[in-house]
Length: 221
Image (cartoon, rainbow, N blue to C red; front, side, top):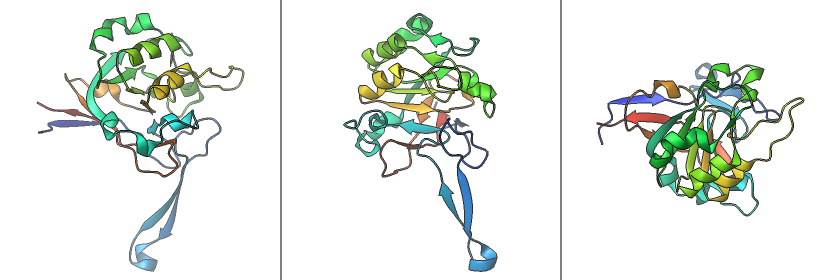
């Protein structure tokens, strides 16, 4: 396979990474330096859901598949970028919104929801993102889609302040079908070529509920 272009869709992990409400901000602590030890080394302290990351079914179900149990094929495949930009905060993405792309939502396809909300990263408004409603999530799952990404903290509404808690309908639909969710993507607008190939392999954390990924879109002639 010859790759002619790669678009990085990942957030850097570090003290500037915006953490989900209730999670810790990642810390990078130098443990060795060239001056003192002859080499540089860093200790990373972070949540398994820091930055751009993948969710496993175990994230929402004690009997759900852990990250290591999921087939690696879930984390790579042809991508479909669904443009749902231009909507207000905390508005649902419905099945009707996905209708123009429904025929292309086939097994093995990675659906990337482009809300445009990555523009608000590192602001509190980032957590007031649009969200995928339960019916739309079930439509994608029924079509055979098992990998869904979004340029927001979550496909479900994020509880914050006066806003009520979510029913986690999208998480339960996707993860309940043995799928995975890739959250906190960015630069989806830079995928301006046809038939992109998506890749987002998670690091192999033993915790099993999720892990950071390096998400990219590749142009393959």
